[in-house]
Length: 144
Image (cartoon, rainbow, N blue to C red; front, side, top):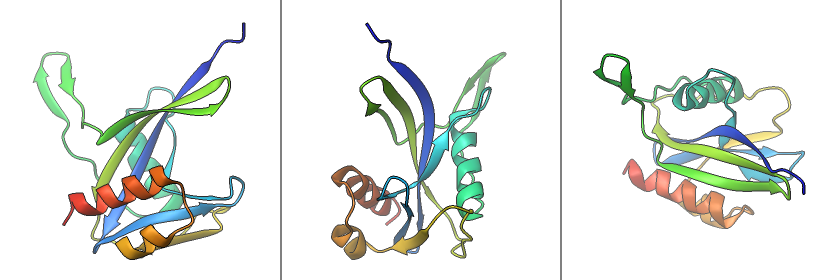
């Protein structure tokens, strides 16, 4: 029996002026939000902030960290936590955050073919998975 491996990831649907930021992943041949693997000893919301900075050069802050008592903190709650099959033996446990930014000038990381701010209409017309469209529209709706 082959063991299933699972990695923790963080994804961020970034919204600005009723548009959501997506990029075209050339290797996977699809449109995706910003995100990636959570580094060892990294908190999910910090991974999301880092991935946004690395991939788009935008600065975001995910609020909600709160000290509850000595040694206990409440972390910012993701909008979704998803389990995604990558292949037959590998899954991602994805903390998905919807965030808003006042910044709109992005600069793409090397290797990113195309990145764009997309309106609701453009998301609906995009050649992307239904999941990406659904989450993009939910993120847009959250900040209306």
